[in-house]
Image (cartoon, rainbow over all chains, first blue to last red; front, side, top):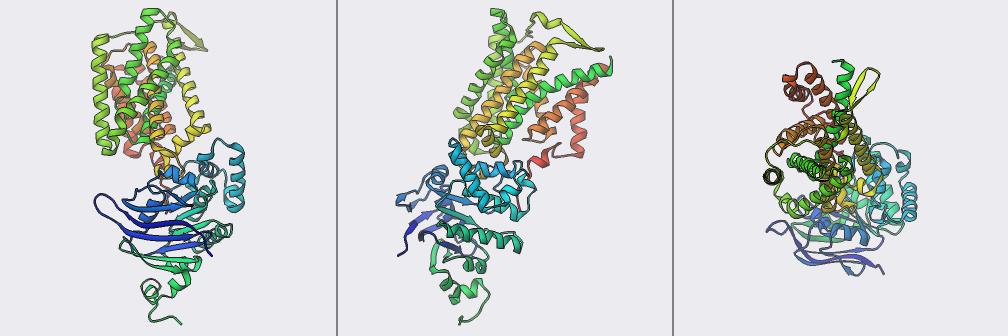
Length: 244
Length: 291
């Protein structure tokens, strides 16, 4: 039986007076890759902001590893084992690749041995981190930057990795590399929750799928079932009629 | 006057400018706050130095760490007590707040020290030494060298310490910094403290180089803002290059056309900004890591 690691129950959240999330229920199982899709304004990014502590929910609970993390600060959420790889623009452009990855271990900075161990682990998972260690992050291509962002997020050895649009703006070769790293993370037992506009890519990569609309979860299930759903196929995959 | 001599003066003056401007630009880089009170911090430190020197006859350079630490604490407290509350209202409000702080400090300094020039004149005030044909007054030499040493210390701190890296990270990408667990409030208060500390150290150097009175703050803040705009807002290397350029150009103008020296200073800024509107290193420092 699958073991849930992250649960959102009846989450309501928004900005100012309005509610973007209107009772979101979501369960993510350990070691899975779950892909959230949905139109713009559906509340996908708001789900990430609530989980990562950037936005305090107005109602409902967020449970991670049996602990309520709703409303914790981003730093506390990070230390609890949830790291985020944002859409883009998250690196420190004038720092070297090595320094960028090192900053991912800011929360464990006082434990030098652990820091060294994690750097070695990240270099093994993301070889670019070692190959381009001295290069300024600002000089890297989009795909390379995304790899460094992933490497940085892995420095705290997170149990859950939130990935916002991992394929955004990348060439096909870079997309394949990023997809391979995402699969590796799941194979190692990490849980990946991602938002992806490229629904075909997302559902191919994921084990589970979530469709959001107007601040609510519309569909949730196996990625294959979601991809085969006639409505999803028609709206997001450009297919008409039922799949065989 | 020999051109080499003038350039030597300019480099030493540029070193002092660089120290002072690096504080303003560090604050802007991390907090997006233009600290228009840096001139009053500087004058406060200079007049405090004068007071202690005139009362106790202490060697003024001994006050460098004292004034640096004092201004760090004052800067940190101003951030935690005032700025942190106003910062969410946007840059316009923070400029207004810091302008208010500057005016209030000037008023208090006027009451305490009076509106007249004060000079710290240690025994070496009128001494000088020669390198070849170049005559260098001790106050300028000491100030220039000390400024470079303190600046070097800040550089090493920013490069090698975790707190320094956190400041650089916050300056380069605030969202990215939050995602790795850097507290924006802690980084901002530290940056403001260090920025104020440069004014504390600079104030001691200023006191042994020039006569000071409370309203001198306007002259200094105008120069410092000119320097950080020229260097590129938020760029410490840019501020250092701009300081050297302006220190040397001002020194040359003072030697050959003294009445035109201020025009030379601001004219140089104007001309360079016409060709590089983002400042000397502005584009580089504000570069986004966008795909």
